[in-house]
Length: 196
Image (cartoon, rainbow, N blue to C red; front, side):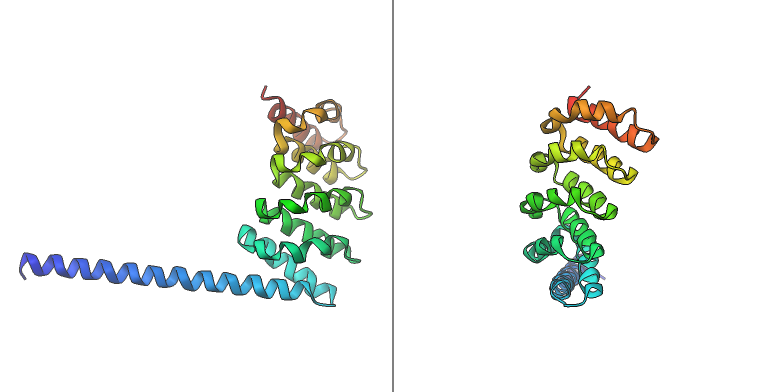
């Protein structure tokens, strides 16, 4: 085989590999878009179990599920606490594209269901400084009766960062919490907020 022919075969093979990779990428994108559409359809179901399944699926997709945000936000007021929990979790995992949900997540810090309160706090933390309006409610959540809520509230304040400086006294008090995991989250968050 001549050198010219070998170079031509290598280039042809590389071209086929690139075409195959592009096709796989495009098919994967179509699959994900289909999963988002199916998740959104599930959110509109009259059955709570189906709405719950849709919110869970969208949470797994993350930021690529941004088109679901307008459908997820009303589910934060769903009658079913599991649906509220998974809607909050999905919005948090979607992250930045769902930052418009911050004001809708804040009231969930006072929800009757501890898992809803916990997931609302965690979701707010995922928005970082965009959740600065949640600083005071999160600081209040440091006194929640549920340890998981207190831990996630402390962690969320640290993720908000310097914009949560008004919560430092509450976080310092939380460093005396009866639960080590809350004390640790509070101490770490004070460092993140004060940069010390």
